[in-house]
Image 1: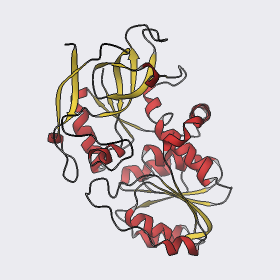
Image 2 (image 1 turned 90 degrees about the vertical axis):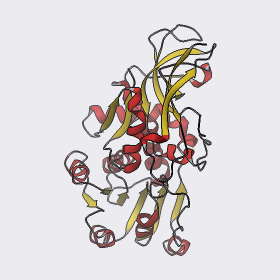
Image 3 (image 1 turned 180 degrees about the vertical axis):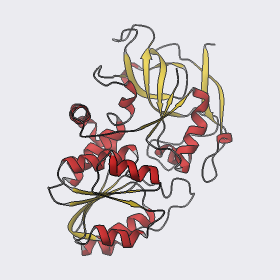
Image 4 (image 1 turned 135 degrees about the vertical axis):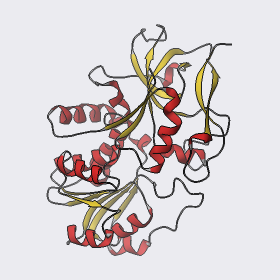
Length: 327
């Protein structure tokens, strides 16, 4: 049997995951498909929902390999690919594998470093691009509030909103993240939600209400934002960081707040917007090259670091797009 090192789920996490919830084992390499080796593995908060069976992409059970978006190098020519091609696909956290040809997608050679295909020019970038241009549709002078604004999705949303002319307020939970949002991402205002009274800060920065809110966390932060929606507000519900590490979801916001503001609230699932990917790649790469959009990566080295890197992400200790560089 041809096998390769692989990260597997050892036991269902209780609360915030710990490294001992995972193990390094061996996984069989399929005999057919596109032969690849992993370069970068994407670590994403939604994976915690998969470990609890609360995500639309399905349950990861003990003994199963961890899987996520991955950038890979084609090892052997075939199936329309040439050895050395850089591709992306949903793959196990594993050194080598064979993937079904239909699940393997070329990475544009203009995307450099290739890790960006998992970050600002990948699924997080597509999430942000769709959220801003399809759901929120900012106009110049409107107020945009973004939670988890230093994360890969939030930071891109905030900067795309700024580029569109919105007055952008970001929320983050550390001095380093808040400083980056002010000095590098160039947001109009930043709220350190762990040090400031959230509602007082929102009243200060949004005296006329919130025209657009991009939510990555849910919970009380969502409630506080909903209490301050302006007439005709738009809300994009994307992430649920406040409940990924809990077994029971919290009570939701009062729908009366939505009705009072005549607000439009949309749930954002990135898979619905795949057709936007080519436009997103060109647009975001252009903004990066022009110096209008900044990004940050948090890269761990080696497959064996993946479990602890994922745990750091779920503790909120990372800064930037969480990735594992495999080779």
